[in-house]
Length: 223
Image (cartoon, rainbow, N blue to C red; front, top):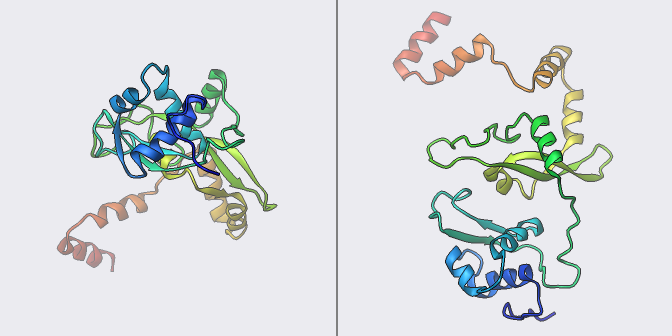
C-alpha cells in the first residue's frame, strides 16, 4: 500500500501527524513544538494527537525521557503501527476513568513499580521530576497465554519497558524451588510490599565502599 501524504486533508489529525514524522522528521530526528504547530496551522490539539501515537507503539521522547533534549525539543525515536492504514488506528486497550486511575495509583502505593520513584521526585543526578502514569504490560500466564494488565510506572520506565513481557509463570516456578525459610522471607517482603535489609546486609554495603586497606582490616577482624 502506498503511503499517503501528510498534507492530505481527508486524513485525521493523528494520521497526518504520524505521516509528518515519517516524511518530514525521520526516525532519530529532532523537531520542536513550534515546527509541529507551524506544519499544522489552524489544527486544534495537534500536540495531543501527536501524544496519542504512543498508544500505537510510537516513541516520541521529550526532555522528561531524554535529559539531553531542551524543553521545546522532541525526538522521533521509533515508528509504531502504520495508523494511516485501514484498521490500524483502532485502540484495542481500555481507557481509564479518573476514579480508576486513582484506585490504581493507591493500589501501587503511588510509586513506580519498576524503579520505586514517587510522583514529582527528581531522578538522581538530574533536575527532572518524575511523572507517574498507567502502563499496560503484557503478562505471560502459567498456562502460556498472555494478557495485558495495568501497572503504575514513571515516564522513564514506561519508555524502557514498552516492549517487555512479564513472565508470571517463571516467577511462580522459581518460587516453587525455594526452601521453606526462603519462601517465608519472600512472603514477608510481599506482604510489606518492601524489602527489609538485615544488619549483615547493611554492613556488607558499607564494606563495599571502603578502600582496599580498610577492607583488609575488616577481613582480618573476621578471620
